[in-house]
Length: 212
Image (cartoon, rainbow, N blue to C red; front, side):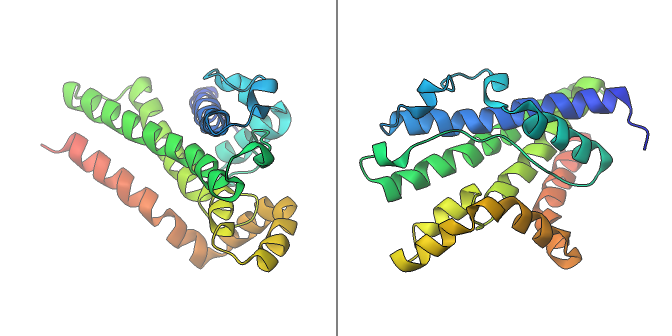
């Protein structure tokens, strides 16, 4: 499959910024709650490149899959040590939610930028295309990471509500979380439902921007 350089640049830039700031949300929230681990690894920064390690699994593989239309694979992780939290079980939930919250904020900011730019100009542009990619990608990352699957942010939220005996078994599945999520989303019925909120949100943004 031939990959357009402009498409690669747009998606690559959006991926680096979106995933980097997602992980920065985890890092700053963990530090705020008493865990020095992110700071010890140089993660207390808004520089997205500092959070994309290793580059192969955090940038290159996801870009190949995103541009080819095959979905999302890989990503970055922020090192944390919940034992430093005053209330580990609860505080782990706050740290988990900080990443998707960053994606929601980015989606809203770039949706606003797309709307304002589009209303001020009758023609599309590369800048507007980037804004739309940012909205799309951040909504997908938000929903994907909030799936209640071990290893994902939604899994860390879900484990808070599990009995202690089930929590240990749930944690044991963390290494397989991404695989479980990808298999689940590969089921046509599940994948279709998953993308409905993203599609509806983008349709609404386009309709509002280009109305009249």
